[in-house]
Length: 118
Image (cartoon, rainbow, N blue to C red; front, side, top):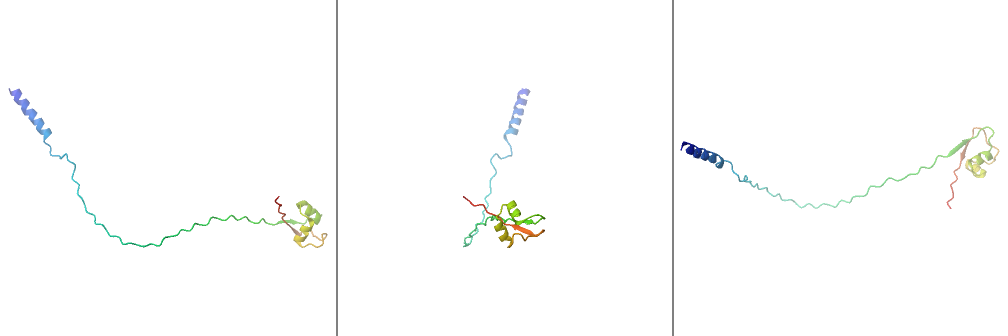
């Protein structure tokens, strides 16, 4: 009988420990906090117009003039022929009236001939 009584006391002890807990299984209650709603004043804004930024301009530099320095033995016709420029155009560009009057060391500006588009 002592065994039976010990078994009942032990069982009730175990059941008592498991069944009666102080923890609450319900989720914790949330507290509601009232946030005051601020009144906003109406603000009339002028619409902003965004201008597109200008893109970079492509600048094609003008080519530097080609200059020939007259060497001993050069003639105006020889210079004109070597650059593929008509002698008349070469003389007019450099203000040369007499084709035979050029001097060693003189700088002759070679005019650019633009290709004709066909």
